[in-house]
Image 1 (cartoon, one colour):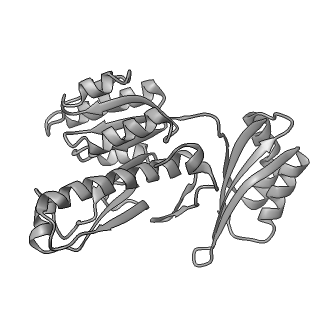
Image 2 (image 1 turned 90 degrees about the horizontal axis):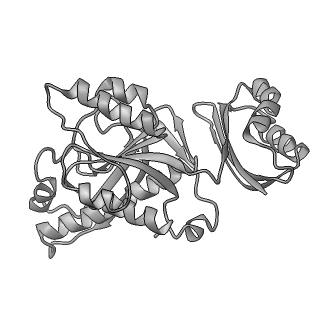
Image 3 (image 1 turned 90 degrees about the vertical axis):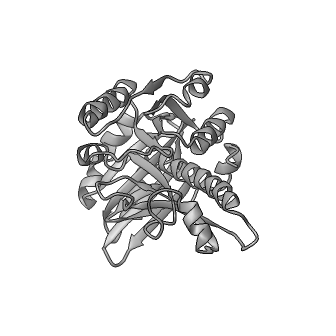
Length: 294
């Protein structure tokens, strides 16, 4: 039985849910999970529906048949085959904790993605990546060659047919052009000390100030550095008895977990852009267990 997801965004009005449910029911589809959110302030409506097609309808047929419903409510919508894995390019510099965590989750099936390439501006993780049978590309970036380097990066992304770029502690600032071209398709991770502790050794700065909470934020990348719509966040508590190195270790752990959860939400089409914010629907019951998401 074919399994699909329908994502919908439109202006809030009466009858949207009924129209969607009736369309799916009339087409021999059975809804298995549904989430919706009505933003009263902005007047926006968002919905994600998982369903099974007993008649085995394909994406093209479902999309064509839904046209009248979509036009009636001026919807932005898309049907997705839930069995297809999203193609992802990971970018990393010299901090490898997020990369290694993602490779492990991918390898055990906890993160159902297709990693089509890893790009780095250093050679540190070439062996790790190649040993996982994933193409590795080292693209050096300097102030002088940045436009050329980004053109090479985009060539890798486009040639691989990637739908998502993950910045797994990639320590280069992307240009406005690249951010706009890949809008809503680049996910970044950073510690939560910004803007308080900038520059080198933020964890050491936090330790010296006696910070009691260490956190991480994963967000979509925009031209505004580290200010894109937030997808996922988390924190871990620290005490006066812990050292600066403890801060670093705990920070790396929470960064890895937050990034993995953000990617998990994105690849299952549970994230909707809502102005400068996001709407993130929870995972359906059992989805994490079935994919062994730790």
